[in-house]
Image (tube, rainbow, N blue to C red; front, side):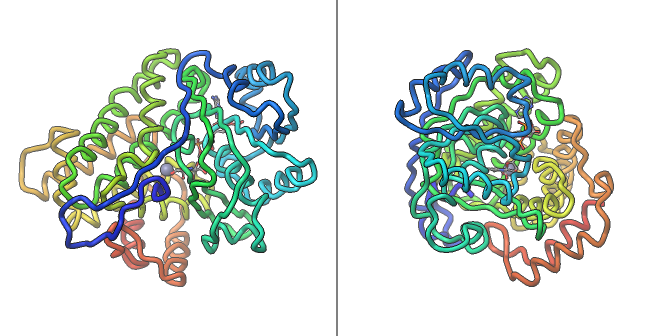
Length: 401
Ligand code: NZQ
Ligand code: ZN
């Protein structure tokens, strides 16, 4: 996922020293109270802008008015109605407008879904190699994309500071990701006051999503990278401390700001430098969204405990480290400590109001069969060691009834 920002060279499973890497993140972050009007300084004055947004939250929260006021002298066409878990079909409608209106700048105003959709629109509009779906289905190279700016209204995905995008094609129940440095936003404006209007569910989803982003880059195997580990642990601890504060008091600006910055830092490539990465929880979670529309963060809360349980042997060192440093779990045998660490993680998700079993989301057993079958057919192997195949995916899911 974060590979476009931190390329680790030559992942050798036997190597226990930090991998060589390259890291470059050019996204300009403009963070803080009352920063939305600065958008006028960031967008090129002669640009013809497509302002993309979602189902209308920005109109209720006042963000839309702030943006329109700031950009009143700019040429703007609007494209609203981007869904959570944005649809390919909707993005392609925007691509038509980009082409017919000669749009040359995309401004995303919303959460991760709007921004991911905008990234795909930016790439699809300039794609010359047939059907743009290939960017997602075949990882076709993105050679060019329109410039993007973002005003982020929901901390969770890290999309504001990475080159990733996840798009669903509803007609075939597929949810697929792509990553390209070409779709990195030129700037992202993060005003923590946007958090004030978020419902509890979205806060909880955001905390869990950011938490699991860290885990995908941390809970692998040791390559003697203490700085990355401690960066990762600091993000986890901050999310554990600040998430509940935000839930308890939506107008707590300081907690909102710390939560927002944690979510960005969780997936901007920094903690991925020189270390192995997992991403299996995400890959399986996307299938649950594809089949049942379950919110992204919630799918992760279901899958991740099963992942830890199944991978308790080859992730042992890191699970013990995580249990000790984050939750203070030091007593008992290794297996007892791992059990306690998994249970405590589940308790944390549930304390935020996020259920963690398939039963609680009414997922039927056939879905596990369908997901298993998909991975059997495509032959993908997941995890930092590429050792999770369809049989293990089935076990992970069946761990979560
Ligand atoms: O659509 P609108 O009306 O704007 O309402 C949204 C939406 O219903 C609402 N919302 C957003 N900001 C608000 C607000 N409501 C009140 N006040 C505000 N300030 O919240 C709802 C959810 O929004 P969405 O954008 O879907 O949430 P999120 O930011 O969690 O994005 C989820 C999507 O991002 C993908 C997920 O798979 C999912 O499709 N991801 C993207 C990643 C990336 N680009 O790096 C990585 C992640 O792992 C993730 O996969
Ligand atoms: Zn995620």
